[in-house]
Each structure stands twice: as structure tokens, then as C-alpha cells.
Length: 322
Image (cartoon, rainbow, N blue to C red):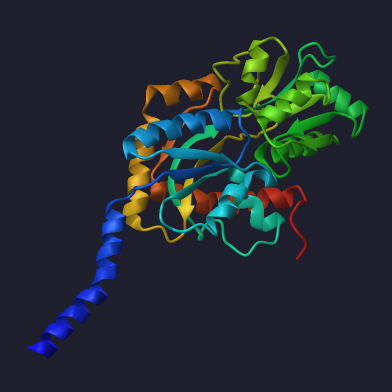
């Protein structure tokens, strides 16, 4: 009898950690969640993601705290996932630049296999803007100046190897011109630079909208399949004969080994958060739209984009040696 009791007690002790782990998982979340985003405070990413985080917090019953990690072409949040605990309490924005990283930089992790893709939420609308009171009044003026002054037309972007940078270099390649690229950490810094006269043009997401509406900037083109409702007079790159469409979906990822039930709770909370009118209004401020993909669709997007971005990096001659 005594031996049987000892065996039962030992069995119960062995089972306790597993039961505790299940209980902890089932109780998720029981503390604040950190959402790391790739760009500085005050820009369109920060403003829209903070709205989304506030909505998700109400669904989850715990704060969702936004942490800004700008720099490195928007890839720092994804890199942070590689050392974060896979418990759902650290999640990150995944901009398109993450899928270019292995082709331009030596890294020890795989952007497709080493991130748990939770949900895609929206995407950037892009364009090129110039000062409203400057000499460049339209796209023909931009191209003419660039051809007459090789390497002197300065333009800013939200960072080296970001979509605005690479797409503008692709435009330059197609036009046969050389531009002078100046990287910034995000839209807020970039807008200060162009309004302050430090650069001649800016390639950016529609974080430039408030400055355009204030009469300080002029939109030369936008990069989607159709003209943007907010800027109906600005032609698309396709309309300008460049055969380029660049819209840059982004969503939320978690560490690779995040438990499926935890990832599902995160997905469901952020999906519900996407439907909140306050979030939709924040997106509309920048002519951004909801772009929902569930976890399986988002993973497929990541796989396809990883292949496509390799071709772009190689076309521009920016791939790392060897």
C-alpha cells in the first residue's frame, strides 16, 4: 500500500508541470503583451498600429504595449522575435523588408521558417512627393531634372532596402537615371527633412498625406494598381509607362514555436480589432485599407514574397556577395 501511494505521488509530481503548462496556456493572456513595430513614433505605422493595439487589448483583457524599434530597413522587430520567448507575450510587425534580409545581410535565421505568421492586417500605399513651392511641378519635371543632373536629385526614404528605396531605384533603373538616396528612420523624420528643404523629393508611404493636405508637398505619382482616392490627380506608375505596382502588405508575427492555441487567440483578437471603426478611421487618414490574411494565407504570402524579393534585389545589384 505504501509503495502504491509513493508511486501515485511520484506520478502526480511528474504530471504537475504539464498540467501547469496547460493551465498557463489556457489562461493566456495573464499579463501585458508587447507589440514591436518597425518605425518611429508619429508616423502612419505607429498611429495605425497603436489604434489596432488598443482595440486588441480590449478583446484580450490585457494591455497591448507598442514598442518602436526603427532602423535596419524595418527588420529589427522580426530579429527580436528570434530571441523572444515563444509564449505570445512578444509579437512584431513584419514589413516587406524582412523577406529581403537574407539576400543583403548575413543572418542566422530564416524569415519564413523562423517566424509564426499570425495575421496580416493592412499594407502601405506609396508615392513620390516634392515640395509644393519647389521647381519640380510634375513627373516630367522630375525625370528631366534627373537626366540633366546625374546623381544630384536627392530623395529620401524610410531606410535603406525598404520598399520605398528599392522601388525608387527600380524606377531610376527603368528611366536610365541616377538619383541620390538619403535614408531616414521613418516617415516622421523623412517628412521633417523634405518640408525643411534638406532633400528634393521623398519616396514614402502615405504618411505624407497631412503635409500634402496642408499645401506643403505635391504628389507626383502613387504606386498601386489604381489611383488613390485621397490623391485622384496623381498618376500611377503604370500610367506613367513604368509597369510597376508596389503595395506592401504587413502583419503580425510571433516567435516560431508559439503554441497554436496562443497564436489562435492572438489571431482572433487582432482580427476583431481590425473591424473597429477607430482603426478603420486611422487607416483612412493615410489612404490605407484593411488587408486580412489568416495565418495560413499569411504564411503562403511570406513564402511567395521571399522568392519574389530575391529577384528584385538581384535585379538592382544589391545582393550580398557569395
